[in-house]
Image 1: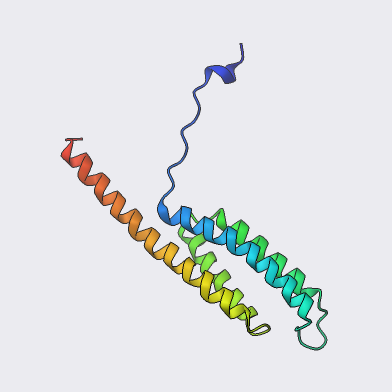
Image 2 (image 1 turned 45 degrees about the horizontal axis):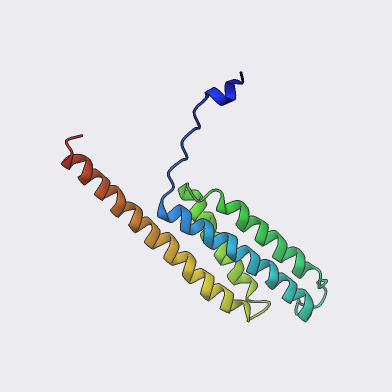
Length: 137
């Protein structure tokens, strides 16, 4: 018999609201950022001397960084990395002012996800502690 069948499956790690919401926002935002890079390329809006294909490269790199950062949001530095990526996207709005719309929408969702998610996690921890005290544990 296989030893793998005899082992009990490892329980899944509990994820908080902040982590779950932050991951969702970054992954969805990465798709929009990639598409924004295609828009930068298609509109030929980069300054003189910069090849238009750098729009695709910039959008792709930022999108990949957002996907990578979504895996680190369980730690405080991962949340900070997400905020830094929001600022980098805002810097892209200097080249294409329409990106400000993406920054406002997803930056607002990111702020809500991280701030309200942390508040929900604190509330849930408080309720769990109260429940444990009520049960005598």
